[in-house]
Amino acid sequence: MNTNTKYLGLDIKSPIVVGSCGLTHDIDNLVKMEQAGAGAVIIKSVFEEQIIYDIKHSLSVMAPTENYGMSYEYIANHVAEDSLSKHFDLITEAKKRLSIPVVGSINCYSFENWMTYTKRFQDVGCDALELNMAVLPYETTLSCEDVDRLFSDIINTLKKSVSIPISIKVSQNFTDMANFMQRLSWMGINGITMFNKAINVDVDLDTLTLKHAPSLSSPDDIYNTLRWTAILSKKLRCDISASTGVHTADDVVKLLVAGAGTVQVVSCLYKNGVDYVRTLNDGLNAWMQNKGYDSLDQFRGKLAVKSNEESSLFFRTQFMKYFAQI
Ligand SMILES: Cc1cc2nc3c(=O)[nH]c(=O)nc-3n(C[C@H](O)[C@H](O)[C@H](O)COP(=O)(O)O)c2cc1C
Image (cartoon, rainbow, N blue to C red; front, side):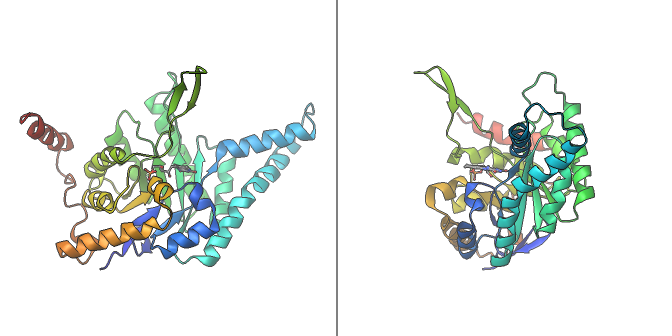
């Protein structure tokens, strides 16, 4: 069965890509993922907050009251470089040991200063870069226009610093999701990862404090990813890498039928081990064989909303079909 495809313009042998997470921060896991047939791996993100924290921490430890003046930039660069070096060492090692694409990942919310570090991802050999744009829409002072400007500033700055393919990983919360994703795809990026899963917060009723809700996705989370992949896959100028809620080989097939270029997995590997990539690949191959398909393009996007079709009409029809019967 031929499951060859493209991811961010790169040739890959399977549409199953391991998403950025703690599991991809370990060289042994990365090797096992390749052996299990992953099409590509996305390394655990470098977090902007982590670098800023390291810079502030180092400066306060060195001399808490001193005014650093001109030397601030020099020291900040040095600390950031140091903090990034562990990631770069892992990427260098992964590039030596793996033949599948190794994608770097950055989780950021601003573009000042440290965008220059993105070039280092390219220099250490990353095949592409995924930018997790963690813009949280929680402030009443943040407007759609602000978010728009932030995205285009970051993408334009990034495109000036690197020539490797760029993918933007987005959250599930935008006022004008369809319109914004389309405009994003016109900004010259190579792919959109839909979606990042928001970290949920829960309440501990004994201590009346906030606590983390479980961070892994559940199988039901796939429906939102499926909806937006089907709505947008034929309306964007770049591929969708579908992410969140993929737990079985059937989920992989559904997202491909909805038009995804690739499908990312994380939670199911935490639950079943990294070798589970093999089970997903086997399930995809078995389904294709059963249906008589030899390549992904024979069925990819079969159930996507067509490029000239009105998405709301399509979904309104599905809604009516269901509710008219009950
Ligand atoms: C433990 C854990 C760590 C993660 N770390 C990152 C990260 O560093 N960068 C990132 O972009 N996404 C990170 N994610 C989000 C995943 O890449 C993915 O978008 C999310 O888990 C939804 O996919 P899933 O349903 O397959 O888990 C993490 C997820 C988990 C569960």
